[in-house]
Amino acid sequence: MNKKHFGFTIRIRSLSYDEYVGHTFSLYIILNLLNIAFVLIWPEGLSGNGRTIGITAVFWMYFLFRSRFSAIVIKKSLPFFAAAWIIFIIAILAGLSDLGSIITRFLWLFAFGIPLLSMFLNVKDTEFMLLNTRGCVYVASSIVLLMLVRRTIVGYSMSMGYALLYPTLLLIHMLIKKKNFLFAVMLAINALFIVSYGSRGPILCIGVFLIIYIFFGGDKSMEKKVFWILLCAIIGIGLLFQYKNVLRLLIRILEYGGIQSRSLGYFLERIHYTGRELVWEAAIQHIKERPLLGWTVGVDISLLGFYPHQLFLEFLLHFGCIIGGVCSIYIVYLVLKNIIFCKKQDVLTLILCCYGFVPLMLSSEYLVWPSFWAFLGICLRKKKRIDNRRNMLI
Image (tube, rainbow, N blue to C red; front, top):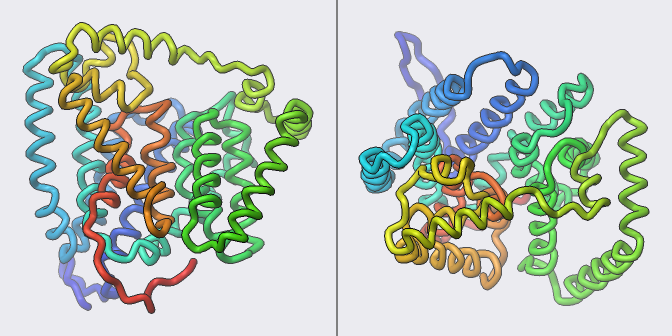
């Protein structure tokens, strides 16, 4: 297919819709990684809003470049944009939140959240789409390797740990499906960074993914499931009695390489208190003050000084127990339906659940977490029959 841009004719290979979504989502993952890496490497660089505008421009340039598909996505997204604008205006008119904080949150929703939600609603072949996101795996491992070699990180980076989740979970799937030395090396690089410099949240998400992938995977025989359950039980019992020695060994290995792991230290010292408990208690008290209609979106900073670090508390705080409660129950239903009680486990849906939904149980906000909206889109899509010949393994 030929396209004319600024007087030049460019030959473009025609993509299927699932390829388009895969490439676009992979681009988002890469831009997010580069955004965070930029801050770690050059802290005095562009402001947060400046970087957001920059990656938004790149994302939308590619998004609109494939005009045949972007028209479909934009048409699908119009109702979501309309609803979001209404909520945005109500939040501003309520006057309970800082205007800058509201604009920042909705900027992420408008720029990435709603487009990704609308894209994933039309995905047909999830395995084929997953195949077309693997480009982010190679870029992620390259960025991490560069930062590890240059010793860019001092302390820890919670944001980078979460940003590496999708490439890491995809690498686990790729390595299980196709035993490959390069995949193993890249997985080791990502895991080293997450354990050394990330928070405990990404480690928890990887653990949830492995448990569901092994125990609820639809392509395994009962004998294999029993084997994995017994193996995990044996390893779990061993760690129960020897986990301190294992953690000390890992900490010594990292310290020998000049790396201090905050997360492993917390696990060893059994430090579970992180300040979230105080935030949760404060959020619950404010929910009790306005239980029916809530406080409107973006009020977290004004009321709590911070966001609630919990998706369902955030819903209740923003929309009250009626609307917020219904939203919470519906999301739990989607998770159970698509992850636990599904006939056959869909790997893309599971990865998006552990990348987009599970982190919101302990961190971040749903408005600035585009992968949460991608997860909703893949759960709400209408499943259609696909050509199995294109359902390729990675």
